[in-house]
Length: 430
Image: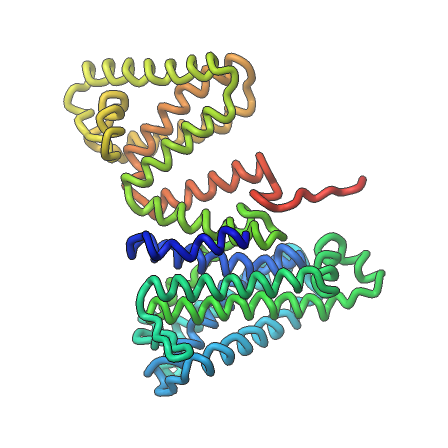
């Protein structure tokens, strides 16, 4: 991981501002995944209030470093205050939750995150315009550190990279300390750890506080980079993205948390552009087919069947309903000319696309239930339905598509490699 972080130094030197901004988002998500890994991956605490710590850090820095209340503290004063305050907030949340675990802890922490969001939206009704209500807080002061003003995406990229490296290094040594080993013991078997005189409650509070402090640090950096904070930045949907990054990379692994954050952030940003999203979509399908289907003649038969099916459907539909299928594929480039003659696109694609989506889900669910030539035969219409649904419904709605594809990626990962990309498989004695 050290080599990868070292190579990342060269990204702003050769990339555009857009790519650098994607890199900043990736490093931010990686930092949040690393913080979540402390409570979830190491201590085994199902913390669904993590997004509230992130939001609290962002709002706290915005209040201390803007004209909202006229405070405008220097960065070197505001950031430590935010980190300490967020850590203390983690302790306060941990106090009533230290005897809870599993679903009960998840419900309490999720309730806490919803309380935070409601306060951010409505606390101004109490007579003090603390959070700006639905409009948030604009005009946050950029970071000023050691005579340097961070104003460009490249400068924030290096800032996020430096902070992520320092946090990962500190957590690396913490993981190998007595506290880190005790967290692992709690994660594996809290009852056995308590019998071995491990102070369960105190260590749970420490895990909450450590993860919250990292989230608060990430929030303050995010507020400075965005030059403002808004309630929509801290909804449950983003909490799902952070969890997805940790699960994908490997819960319990620092390297996995960083890798998962980078992969998920880059993937979500790629899916904003229809051309890039289509290339990624069809590329993943091609790589999956090549990796999973053997021998090669079997793969060739499936691809040939899908191609023939597409041309047959195109010929039949255009001859029977010549005016109803005059739409064009959304994908661009050389891929568009191939797909245009293979996929029929309705003039009004909403209803046919919805029905095709239902049929696609049914085919995907049926694939594990059949074997041999029946499975190969079912793959053929599944591929065609996937392309049809993509071109008619999904690629035009990136917000929905990103969530669906992220969910599909996690399902596949949990089935193929439950421990994540880098995480260690858990071995249980029966």
